[in-house]
Length: 262
Image (cartoon, rainbow, N blue to C red):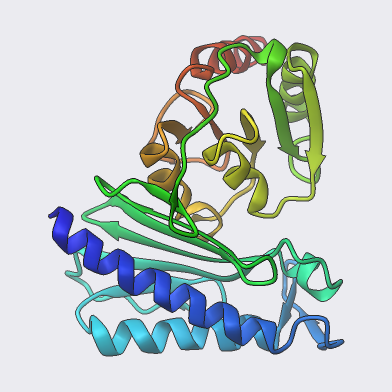
């Protein structure tokens, strides 16, 4: 299993890298954007990136299913493997020439997210992991932070998703406990900061499968946690948190206290 996953991981890293090269051809070029029904932007770079990834998967693993943000589900009825694509996570950053957008690629095997790759083409940084293979940043092993209390922790949250009603209360509770807080713009980098030990908590909500598919493997292999606000690593809702195993009890206790008041 580990050897097979390593082969999948090598393929995924190369594929995400190549897709990233496609996006760089349009980055900081004044590319035109269209708007989808939910008012989120999409560009030719999003479409071309996903097309490249799909073609590589379909030619290399024809029995695997594929789901992506731009072109939907091309799954096979009995496929045990499903690739999950976000061709550009952070298109709003991309169209404003901000280099924190990413190509996300995950692999689900028999219902479990076993592999993830996050490529930041404009930064020259790529993060990747597979079950039993460790978590890596440009070839260097990464681990979550050893900090064991929020009073010395850096807390990030998606300011667009986590500042309304009860979600805003969750943010405020953790902000009061954390040493440093940053309301993030919603792109992938904050999750990666947690996985690589440069931040301790990232809180988000309103995510789709392709928005978070790489993170379970990357956080797990880095010694961390990626799951919902109740402590479940299998995501069934839209609320997610990334943190270290050391801080998980404290973070979940704050979130549980909030839920009990709702």
